[in-house]
Image 1 (cartoon, helix red, strand yellow):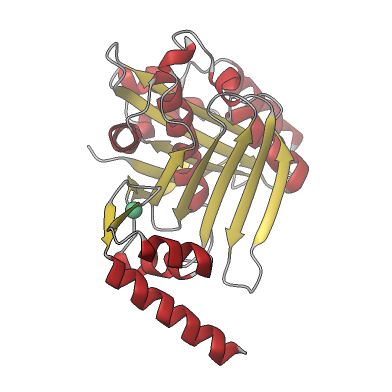
Image 2: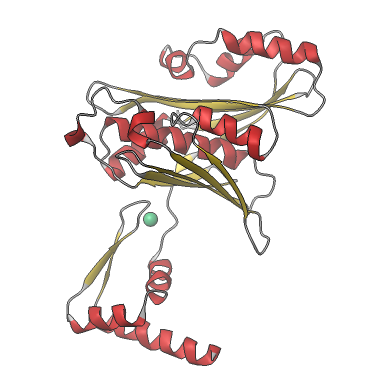
Amino acid sequence: MPDYVLKATAGNGQIRVFAATTGGLAETARKLHQTSPVVTKALGRLLTAGSLMGSMMKNADELITLKIAGDGPISGLLVTADAKGNVKGYPYVNDLLDTLEASMPVSEAIGEGTLNILKDIGLKEPYVGYSPLVSGELAEDLTYYYAQSEQIPTSVSLGVLLNDDGTVRQAGGFIIQLMPNTDDEVIDALEVALSDTPSLTKLLDEGKTLEAIMDDLFKDLSLKISKTEITRFICDCSRQRITKALTSIGKNDLIEMISDQEDIEVNCDFCKEKYSFSPEDLQSILDHRTDSKEQEG
Ligand SMILES: [Zn+2]
């Protein structure tokens, strides 16, 4: 079964519900980035948030980027998602095994820091939201972000369950939001529902579907599922994009690379794809760069 996001409403349309099962994409990320267990969990959670928040965007060409910076050993994580279920991301440090991580919680691996959210909604400047990390476990941090930056009461759950060998067994999460002026009875019923729900990944591991889990959770609030959408880890890098990135580095750096007379290899941060550039390729990038500068001047 591929990963997917479920969109629904409940409580007569006063509650917006987004839920996702993301074990496949979290495992893809683990393999690509060769992450050790606590990093696998942190990245899997943030990718799940990306899948969910991507699916919440209104227009097909919007992009959202979630950036965590922390003073813990992971240093940070970056995830980008679109509105079509495509998500990609990477940790700044992939392997913490030499720092006795076995029982380290995600919050300790991330440390104190900030959450930045960039929404590219097709305007000149992207929307930028920012909030401090209040726990470092990521779900609580997103809840806080929504309350503080967007003034939307939100409940966020993100989880990654690992096998003994460190591979991903289950991953998933949900984002539940209250619409403005929601009735008190609906708020109370939601609080009761959320207070005694076991973890989503545990329920998925018992073989329950996302639909059944959400139906159970909202049994008194009449859940209406409006849509399900496939979500996956996919990178859209290309030689053309990497070339563009090389074009923007300093002229002297390019000249130095060319003078080394050796091919250079550039890895995509998101998917580790290797792109090789010969000194001749670099020369042509430099020439192009000089041209465009002169045209600008
Ligand atoms: Zn890539």
